[in-house]
Every structure is written in C-alpha cells, then in structure tokens.
Image 1 (cartoon, rainbow, N blue to C red):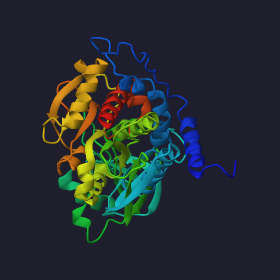
Image 2: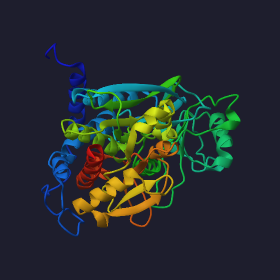
Image 3: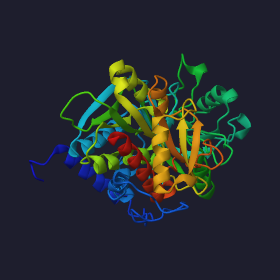
Image 4: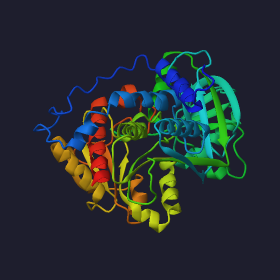
Length: 466
C-alpha cells in the first residue's frame, strides 16, 4: 500500500472489494439509451437544453451501483446510531471528500437499539445469517445455540414433550406474548423467536424488537427476538425439511449517536442561494436497504461526482440523513440547527427515497409534497420531465409526508420526495420494502435509477444555474 494514499480512499477501496466479492452473482441489465435518444416509457424524443446534456452525458447508474454494493452488501443493515450506520457515514463522507466537497459529519443522539443475529453454526444453509430485533425486556448481550422446535401459538398443547435447551418458533400475538414467554421459560427453552403475522400482499412484515411491557421490571431470563415475514417462512421451510440448529445472539446498543453527512461544493464567497439534493442512508432492522434508501444515497453520490465541476450560480449541497427510519430524526435535527437566515438561502430540496426498485408494477415516478402543493422542487422535476420526454411517467404533485422532505416543508422550505411506486397510489410499495429481500438482486433496476439520476440531476442543475 502507498503510505501516502488518502485514508478514505483505502477504506473505500477495501469495502468496495468486499462488496464486489459478495456480489459475483449480481448482474443487472444496464440502461441502453443515448443522451439524446428516446427514453423507455417516453412518448417523444427529448428536447434537451445544454445543461440537460451536461447532466445526461455524465451520470451513470452503473457507476452508482458500485457504491450500492458497498452499502447493501459490504455493510448491510445500517441501523441508526449503531456501528454499521457509522461505517456507512464514513464511507459516504470519504467518497464526497475525495470528490472535493467540504464535508461535515453532524452528530445527534438517538434511542437505544436492541438487535439480534441468527445463524446456522454448521454453515448450512448458507443464506441463514440474519439480523433481527431483540426484546429489551428479555436477556441481552448473550449467545445461545440449540435445535429449533416449532411451537405454533406457544400454548401448552403446542409443545412437544421436552423443549429443554431448544429454540422455539412461536407465532407473535400481542395479547399472549408475555404468557408465551413465561411458558417457554418454565419449560426451560433456550430462546424464543417470535414470527410476525403475514401482511396483505404486496406488504410483508419487517423484523422487530418485541416489546414485553409486562416483563419490564423483571426481564425474561432467555433471549426473545422478532424476525421478518420472509425469515419466518424460510425457517419453517428449513425445519420441515431437516433438523435445524441455530446460533442466536442478542446485543444492547446504548448511548448512541447517529450522524448526518453534509457536503458543500466549495465557493469563493460565502452566502448566496443553496440547492440541496438529499437521501437517507440508514435502514430498518434486518434490511440491506438496497432500494430503501441505498438507491437515493448512491444517486446523491453519483450526482455529486457528475455536477462537481459544472458552473453554477447557487451552491450545491448534498445531504445524507441518519436515523430517518426512526422518525426523520436526522433531517429534523439538521433543520432545527439552521438559523432562519440559513433556511432562507435554500431554494429547493430534492429528497430521493426509493428511486430504483425493479418491482414491475412500480411504473410511476411520484412527486410527493408534505402539504400537497407544488413548490420549486416539484416544479423543477416537472420541467425536467418535460424536457427529457418523461412526462407520461411522473405523477401530479401528491400529498404525502413520511420522508425527509417533510422536515423542510414544516418550516417553509421548498422540498419534495421523489420515488418509484405503484401506478394507482404512492402507498403501493414493492414487496421487498423494509424486509431482508431489499437486495440489489431482488429489488434494483438500473434503468429506473438512471431515469432518477437524469430527472433529479437536470432539475437540480437547472435550479442552481437559474
């Protein structure tokens, strides 16, 4: 290794090598249109400005994919405030630093997290190495190993004769959860894995940290964890086919700090207008977060690369939010710290959340506004869609919050969320949403990512040069 090499470059290269090594089977079809060509889903060729061409000729979904492999394969689930989220923040900040941006890691406190890991100690099956949630009201910072037994609803009649030292699969029912755990303890089981009820398709239940409020004073002496719907069916499938042995570990993550990554394009003068492009980089428990929101994160990184040397009248600012999945904590913290004079500088915030799903029904690119009204951000994307020939693919401006654009609109800053979702409603999200199946192989379209790059890149650049 060159001892003079930038440390961020070394770390970035090592993580990329790990990700690529685990992604040999991931091969996605690449976008195939020319900068001036007819786009998929368009009804006419584009009518591009010179600035649009500057963007279209520079952005590459395939280049962004390399970063996505680091985030979703090399790092995996990125839970707000935990080490994995910090590793992702440092990777992102290292990329932006090498691109020449002035980068800040903005820390803020977040709540404790309780996580678990399930694996097969014999290495079979190879896909069984999962993060899930741990109950804060049961044994933490522990590790057990045992054969798995399906105990159904967890009543006395559901148990085989002897479950001593066994890991129990039990269907999660709120009304009986404490009694079920008490029975498992009395029967000397080693651990309980709660299985969620199936949601109505296309929704699937996420991994969860089971709350046991009746045991808050005296936690259960065994670990209790909650898996996702996809893991539930996989566990029962494996158990029906053969003897299944698992290793289960739980960890309490306390006194946590999450981070926003803020990157400003250097300017010779201070003050002046700002155009922001943003996404959140954290995930829910157990989800690799390829689309939610690794896709938005790598869109920001690729646009930061493509736009960094283009002349603008406004300052470009890229922001990657921590702990969005816990309630928009990172973006709300950022906005709360901004003096009014700094808020007034921001012309528009282009928030990108889930911009690359490969789910076939997600044919509409949604323009989502917290108040349901158009603003400079939605106007920018609408105009870019017209120039690029994408108008048939975008929605009208639609009322919806629940992403980081809301934090800005709550204080009067023009912002919107941009996302691929089902045609009929922005509530139609892909089945891998918030699940272990949110992977590159199962849930990423480079074509849709390329469309998103062109739309947001053209809109943000036009705003910054107006």
